[in-house]
Length: 372
Image (cartoon, rainbow, N blue to C red; front, side, top):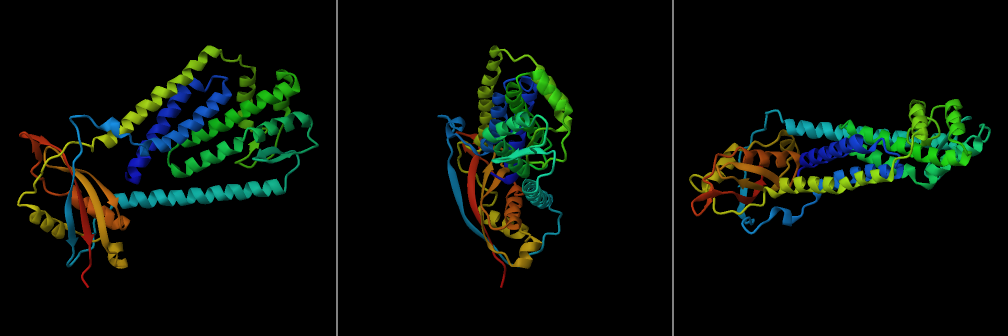
């Protein structure tokens, strides 16, 4: 599986899971269940694309026969590829954004560390076992109880998980909605416990309205986030959801199953029964095509990069070469060049079974070597 394929499937899963949450669950007062749902949604969104259950893609009439063409040596005078490589540009953009996201996380951790070591007056926040509540605050005990809930229920672990997910899919706006919603649920859970501790929801709601906190470190769980006060008070006063509404969470099972089937089906399209396919003029002509069409990437020419790229691909019923993937690469440039060569190949004579065209999978080793 290529990185692009993984990211596309992971982001699609994130979108589907979040849409389901906003449509059916976010107004429910089952805060613990909502917390679990969001965490499971994020974890499975990254796991589902790499899961593969062979029984989903096999049947008695559909078996995979994988053939191997001998290694092909690509050598001789090579020319730098002057065509604009959009795939390479996408990889550069993605990893650049990834690097910036990692640096930003380290900055936020550094800023949080500084606030933990040097807490300001009037501040109340927590991060894992570190809890900072100004003892001079009015209603200190209630506010302290609020922060204790964050610590006891390991809410900071959720935030850190969301931050890591946000690094991987930094370009997807929906991951930031996951972050916002998980923090909101943390506050609902802490508010529920703190209101019980205060003995009155009305009294606790007045406390939320009256408290004005300073700047809070972004990764921490804080007693007050001004943009959420109204939402928290409304949720605090909302009538608890009926237990019958818990059935909604059972829909996660068919939702997961559907996404798993779709993901496996994408991979399963490559598991087809195969018979001989022939390149017009024979294998020697195909080798000649590869040698003639090869354009060494400029960066690999500069670095004198050589090696064998193992590629797998399918020859479809029309003789087209499709679904080319690198099984074992050498460098991003040579890997992409091998994929380009296979994908742009002239049509083959497709394989057939009893006179009916069928698909066939091949493995090939393209050995890139520069002339000395």
